[in-house]
Image (cartoon, rainbow, N blue to C red; front, side):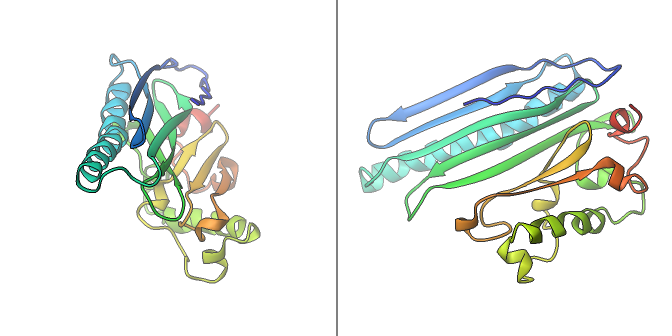
Length: 229
């Protein structure tokens, strides 16, 4: 079910989310559940996070329902129920930084169900709220993807991620570069099945401490509360 880990940052105001739960089902056809954190709208960062999360996660949920209903109307009852379940974990929720990831499991026919991670990071950049990319965490001029991949790849190789060990994957894509969450001490990557290896290998994870990136991270950027604590 819902997992949540809230970390307070010294000197900042913690944003306590409420929870929105959506469920929809029809016996023998489908069931779906979406849980999302709802951050205080009085916070500019919370307002931005709520909007981005609804567009992506709410949009995916609504699209599953639309397609499933269309398929059942056209083809009738499926051999096995379709399903789509999404639950969040909040890593950081403060006035200057929000970091959350969603774990989605789903089945829409085929040989097996699937799983996927979706990550969101929001912070203040030059005084304005922004959905963060990896590059926003680093000093200007730093090749953020190369720096991070140099730390992440050895961990994936140690875990025998097949598509990394055989050279098929030799860097981040636009999606995987931003599949991270922030903690008080590190950047943690979450890779879904099929991103670093075949389905049978499942998910892969990597963690890079801020101390290992000290010369590259922007000390006045979104991570400043952690770097200066």
